[in-house]
Length: 112
Length: 113
Image (cartoon, rainbow over all chains, first blue to last red; front, side, top):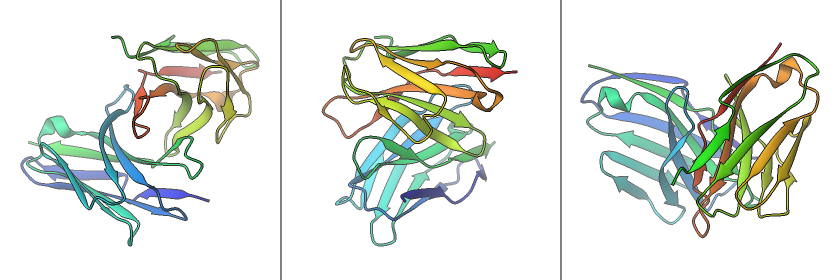
């Protein structure tokens, strides 16, 4: 069955550094992969989507890469700020194309 | 636009009680979803509705029923609540014509004693 893993539950970094979060998947070749941000007590918010034919996608301080050979996506936040502290979820569409499968998330803490 | 709204925000039930979680979206989206989120388990799909008049089971449908009342509203019902259904429930909808980017509601925190 399809499986999606985010390799660390928690990541602590200092303000100004680049945070890199990893998402790996198995038993599937998704057409695209998505990243969401979730703050405590709130629902996830869509951030970025990257298609299988795109190697890299950028939005302001965010960068996502997608390596379909490694079956891996990396999510980078450059010049991180305490306001970036949140849980970040990756998601891919199920093989039937009907729903999203989410990773368990990585909680990022940025200290000043 | 309010986006996706959910009621109630919090609820405490006793084992065996029933209740309905309400969800509505004002974005004219076709597809709507119900998830539960538990510590260490991530978001798991309970049911979804690809369009008005259709519903399908997700990964964890047991103990739940859904109704797609109209294009805007998608409700989740617990007929006989169990402690294992203690969770945070999220409703979401998909932007029509997009790449399945989901818009989530604020969640309902349910405790079953």
